Length: 142
Image (tube, rainbow, N blue to C red; front, side, top):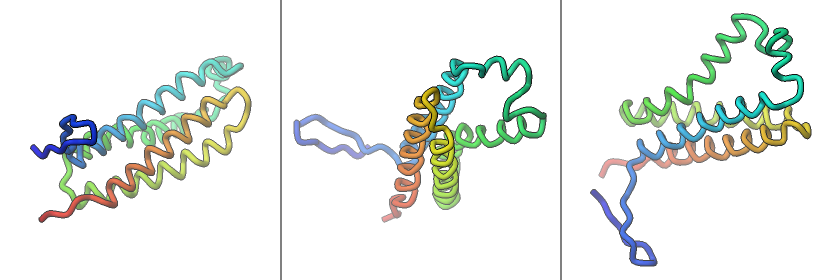
């Protein structure tokens, strides 16, 4: 295992790119979960869930949203499992895709009660940009 010593003399270990990507996707997934949980505290949100007066008002929309939100969770596993070429491509593709989605969500959620949602969307955008950067700079075989 590669080790290096930092400025204060503590030993540090080189973390494999696949592990870095898996943890970044884990962070994105957790931010999604926190955002959806905290959204339940927004006034009238739970009433809309009960009355079915919300964005996910039919089975197709609900399935498509579930499919979309399953991607970051599956990318945790794929980042470890897949071979480098396809792994790098999927991380760049989905990293860019989710960055765009989260920036759009941030700008369409600019209300006082959704400040937390804007914060989490921008944080998720920063994380998915990191995913793209790490995947783009995937180390070459020597």
